[in-house]
Image (cartoon, rainbow, N blue to C red; front, top):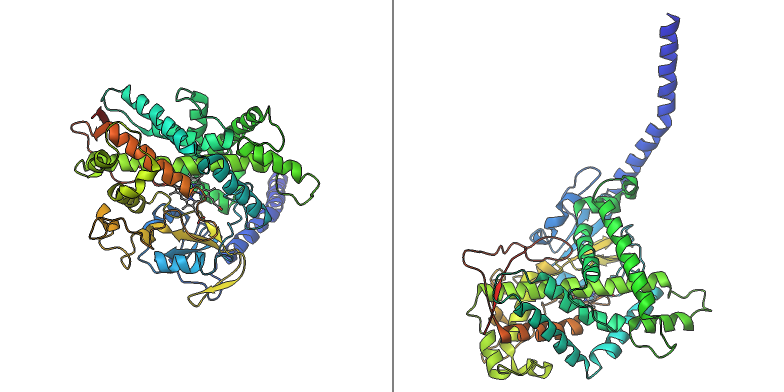
Length: 489
Ligand code: HEM
């Protein structure tokens, strides 16, 4: 009897011990469910699941543009709106550019550096420094175009070693493209045999894919998940730590012989700014921000331009009747290296590259924005701090601006006399204050690499291999891995 009573007493005590954590859990749950309620006047949207909201639908978000021009979404307590179509995106990013220039405060995107930094002094200073460096160490230098052409020759020679046999171009394109950014940031290129640099880019790209996965987004909504020793977020942290270490050492090496106020590249220019601001306690320049900015510039420049070129190669091998090679032969000829001044004489090539950017939607949802103040859009109230998803995919498939948008048709960028025409609703680099700062560089690289490649090689798929046109989903849309034969013309 006594033993049973003692047992009962023990059970009661354990129940008492469990009560506070259970209450805490209930309180947290109630708080979370309250956070999931739509604020008054917020745009309507699909009902999400309890707790996780619509996180599970993240990977198909760009395809939900038929829902409405603006709809709301609950990402596990993070309230978000999705902007669909050119008019809605322009209305927010251009007409209310300042209010929509912030980035969300998500645990994954700590707010360091430039691309993920909040709208404020830190962002203004870092963006200005990056834009100036891209100009001074990049396209304002007369020799810069020549440096891209030199890289194109390394790239073509490396392709030649496959002697027309099928291979995956991905690594060579990645190396060539990242080397152009490397020249501006570090003042040097890396050889295609540099496995350490390649490994850094590989795990960095893996993180770009992981960052858009539902399970990593769960971490944004429930940061305590970070303590769990398993899951995709752990892989992401591990990769990020390795990339950070690599960049830290690289920055030390390339700044070893720096002469203050005589910058040779972005890293030097950044360290000069750090020196100039060392007595300003509010200064946003720091070693930490330098490493983050360098990482963001490398990955933003590499992942995007590489994927445009991979899609372009895929379409050229798929539709060999496309007239680009005819135009190259006519304007450039077989021996001379392509030059940027020839771009305006090659409307068809320009049209093809534009159609690849439109049709393939390399950054389908842009980079998430946030509102820095309460505002009103189309009669809906959008509170400060709302996450804003710009569905650029929907802009490129907006039937108000594009006829038969689901068809790959470069001629849509040509007028009746074959001249290139610009289109308002062409926004692969986004709009407004946070628009892509690498657009000019990306355009130079795409033109020079693409024309050099097609000048030297015919591209075709090996017999029997049919490429999959379904993109691989992530923060960027990339083609599924494919092999191609590049035969000397
Ligand atoms: C075809 C190639 C490229 C595409 C399609 C592309 C697209 C984009 C898009 C859609 C954004 C988001 C803008 C927004 O938040 O609204 C962006 C931002 C950005 N891009 Fe690019 N990009 C490309 C190449 C590059 C290159 C070559 C660089 C630099 C090396 C670069 C650096 C950046 C940076 C730093 C941002 C963040 C800007 C900010 O937050 O102020 N991009 N890009």
